Length: 169
Image 1 (spheres, helix red, strand yellow):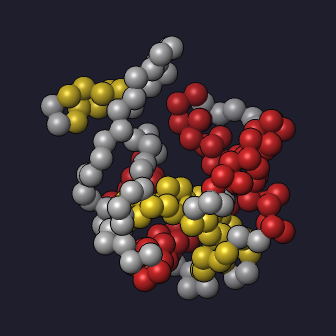
Image 2 (image 1 turned 60 degrees about the vertical axis):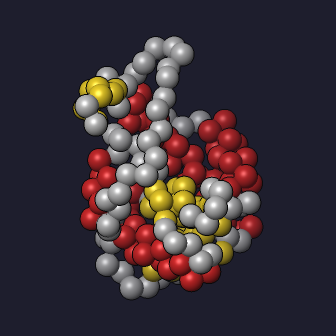
């Protein structure tokens, strides 16, 4: 684990780099269902718009040895519980403990600055690596389950049983 990992405030000079990270973040999640897709200019424009929205939350840059390698976004969702809405580490920096350190720093921010009694994380069920990481870090309580109904073709073709129900993930 890199001890020179920090969560720093967003700076406008980071905009292009962070917008690319956001586009890659969404591209990765889309690929879990649809396979690999190449990002295009429209994806980057949407990511820049998303960044503008996310700056209304607690948006921090993951910095390692002075280099911006990812981001975290935290938000209050009613009450006092903080949600780690999004966490992203660039692929070339993964498997180095950076996400683990960013989670710990996010927990400290939620406790010390926001005075939250808990931190919740949403995770896409197909993102097994993220599930493993969160579980390893103590996220072993299920609080809310998001159910989804597809209005078109359902590309979620993996079946899982949960609490006695069959779900597509």
